[in-house]
Image (spheres, rainbow, N blue to C red):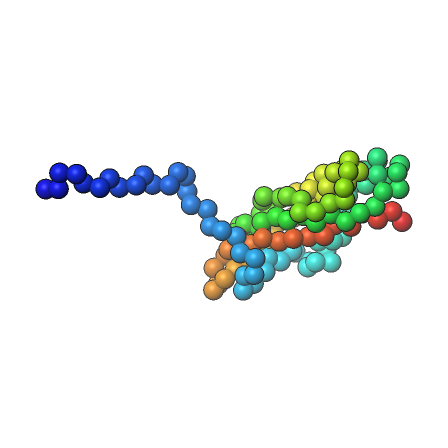
Length: 126
């Protein structure tokens, strides 16, 4: 026998998480389509009071993952207006995305996959 066997590396900690796709064969779909999704966002949106008082508008880009089961995870801001008023819009954008219904998952070769999605959320005073 070999006097100094090479030790096996330890297994990676925890379960391996599949990297989300950006361009699957089939994109995740919201029940009722994109129009319904933007309606749901608008319905649950509460314009931040501090932004109302200052006449502040802006666009926030939110990124999230649609998991294999259609649930949303890993919500984060990619871009938002600068300053505290921009942060207020970003916080509200995350809150309304969390309130979205589940999606039908994206897939590749007929298999459900995790998919990264980016959504622009526009805050406009009318």
